[in-house]
Image 1 (tube, rainbow, N blue to C red):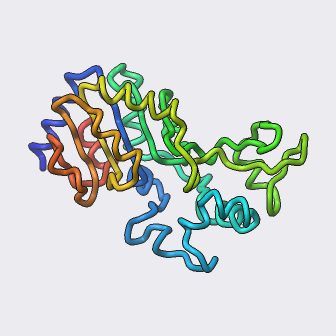
Image 2 (image 1 turned 60 degrees about the vertical axis):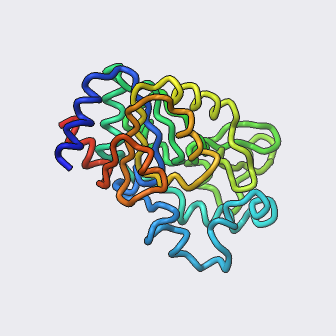
Image 3 (image 1 turned 90 degrees about the horizontal axis):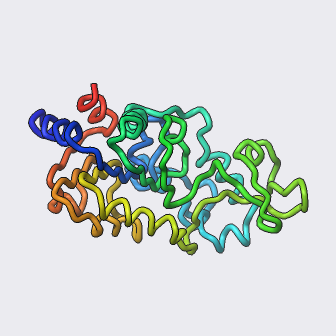
Length: 243
């Protein structure tokens, strides 16, 4: 493993065109549970009588807003969570001009809290909310501090998080930008994701280089395609290669 980390450290030191693509495993070290892991929220919640995957669908949101927002407040929002070594390491690489973009499936805003600026949020974020009628923008505190279904203080419309629910399409402008960065990258580092959720997982197919790095605690279906595979906590990896 040390030889693998040394190789990654050398690649990073020599490159000025790195792109990072990350998933829920990037934030688990900050105390935010993932979705599909052994202790992920898909496997541990039963209080609502339906799966979290169902609750986080467009249909359920339209028909059961009270339950949707109760679930979000209790199980999706972690305002006390702080960035970990991976978030700070990526922000540092961007500040040094080495990292061109962070592409994330996460909705927790931790990359921005760590100082990253060019963050492409494939699934949106809980930290942006908007009125479904007039479009007025609201922060996360507005939703957290409201009771039941949050309503716009201007027009009374329902305020919802700016996240992509199941049955909704990803933002194509964001996807196109992600493809652009990945296709031009010298190094593509993929971390904290099982690469099981499409279409986001399909982004790996646009990488044309020969320095594909997969960092994940468990194996993924894409390990055989990678030039480096590291089965460690991603925060530990960044501690070692940037320390």
